[in-house]
Image (cartoon, rainbow, N blue to C red; front, side):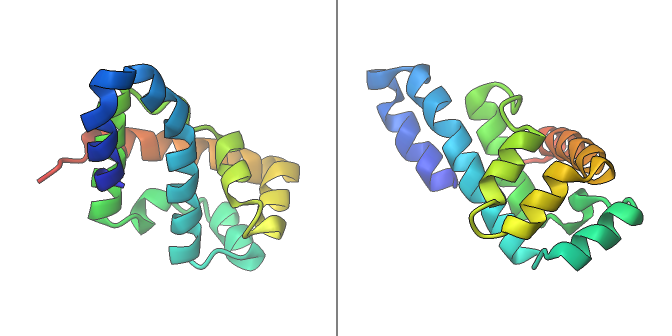
Length: 128
């Protein structure tokens, strides 16, 4: 993802920050989808994670946190990353997981906490 951001930054002067704001959710969707693949999420794992209130931050690798930090610095914030964006991001590759997160109140609450925790963690990550 940093390569994409560097390319966008090069053209940022031509197109302004508006282009970055347009593309950021799509870049985040790809990143989120990849995380779910890396974590091998299925409905059983999701149920266990929710019931045990497992932190997704613990599953993120340092380079993944740094990538989010770079995106946050480019955008000014990560407010566009929401539980609904996460569900939208994974529904193609993980339809049962997305449905469970969308329709299970405990799962939706857990996801909202995870999204906020990950955004905070990204703010604290360093680029070194």
